[in-house]
Length: 296
Image (cartoon, rainbow, N blue to C red; front, top):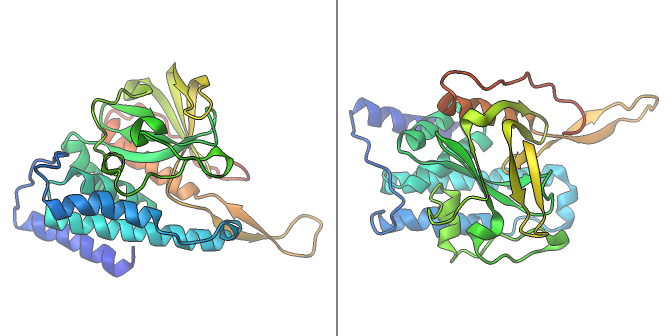
């Protein structure tokens, strides 16, 4: 998000509050949501996510990948902001903003969106990689005031097409239920693969690429790719969003400068600190200091 757009979005919030505008009850019901707003938060978001931005070879260029990722999330924010303008009761639009403002490093706007979603009884959703379960498939994780809900990708996407290395591809744009889920409107008939009440989360540690949720009691999560289950007393998860950055450094004993990728540790820290403001009012969950080094 550019600075001017950040000011504009903040201004819209301020004007609404100053005018004393009553906030409507948020809803996931497609029969109630204004049709254009609904399409922006389902098919519109899908088309943005599925738009080809780089070739397979470009993935080796971390700088190019980061630019493409930023562009995708910036467009996602615009779509969700427009959807809110069309229908302030659209739960998906607020849920998308709660997630994407964190990716775009807009903490104040993110916190406002989180508050709106949490107060409305909703959840903020990410696609995710759970490395200790299966690094080559995805999961869907929903965060609400009560708990963390973990779904296998196939539960939400229904049918899964796998690409290189067995990694799933995102469903086509006509799979509106999947993209509604990414906005926080997960079909309530889907039983999560695992549910973790916040009272069972003892600590959230932030690294370069992942968050570690340390649990008081273990959970069991299975892979939709291998069907193998894993018992976890700690969830090591990459919540998809920010990519890394290139860092120039001088290797020990070498006169030539080197380049390496550095993970978005600041993003990980922002995500966990935003979460706990709404799910841990008693400040019971430990947040160890971020000490980014090499690796996770």
